[in-house]
Structure formats: structure tokens, C-alpha cells
Image (cartoon, rainbow, N blue to C red; front, side):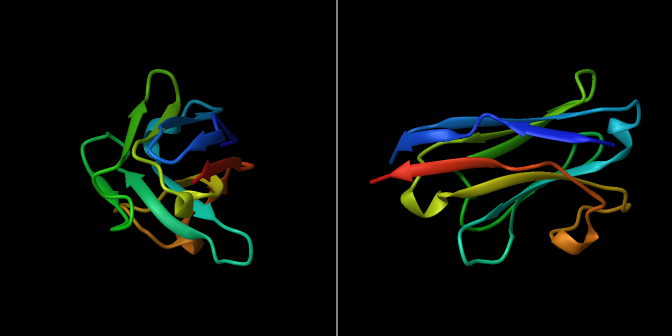
Amino acid sequence: VQLQAYGGGLVQAGGSLRLSCAASGRTFSSYNMGWFRQAPGEERDFVAAIFRSGGSTYYADSVKGRFTISRDNAKNTVYLQMNSLKPEDTAVYYCAADRHLLITTKASDYDYWGQGTQVTVSS
């Protein structure tokens, strides 16, 4: 599966952005999907994940209550709604697809990655 992330940009602290990740292929609904982010000089960190059916979600503590992950299997797309953005949310955001049975937060478990989209939050 090929992934294309978009929707990043520059936003002021307290603002919102919605990231989208479009997937190619007919098997999108068989993958758990995740969002990760990577700031300069930092490791790639888990942000959120959603089960293949959309029935379960999981969030990093740093974004819980502010970010919402969702998916539309009919459109082969996963979303990340980001509200109350903070300067520390600044990073390149990546979407990823995983074939494991259960949701995983480990980047190394994910099989396919999108190219990343830059999110910059100004103070």
C-alpha cells in the first residue's frame, strides 16, 4: 500500500489543523493505521493509532484530549484532527500502515509509511 499524507502547515498556538493520509490499493481496511511525528534531532514518536475497523483508538499521553484519529475505509483515508496546538507539537507528521492483529505504538512494527507533512506551531 502507498500512503500520501497532507494537510500540514503553519498555525498559531491554540489553533487547529486536520491531517489526511490517502492510501492506494484495495486492502486499506485490513491495516491498522498510525500517526507518528518527528522533530529535528529527535526520534520518531508515536502520536495516535486506529484499529482497522475504526472501532478502537489509542493516543500518546501528550496529545490525548487534543487530537482525534479517525478513518473512512470507503475513501481509503485516515485523518488526524489536531486541536489546541502547542509549539511542542511542531514536527514532521507521518502516517503508517500496520498488518499486526493488535494496535501497536512501535514505529518498527509498521510496514508502510507516507512521506510526511510539516506542522509548525508558532507561539
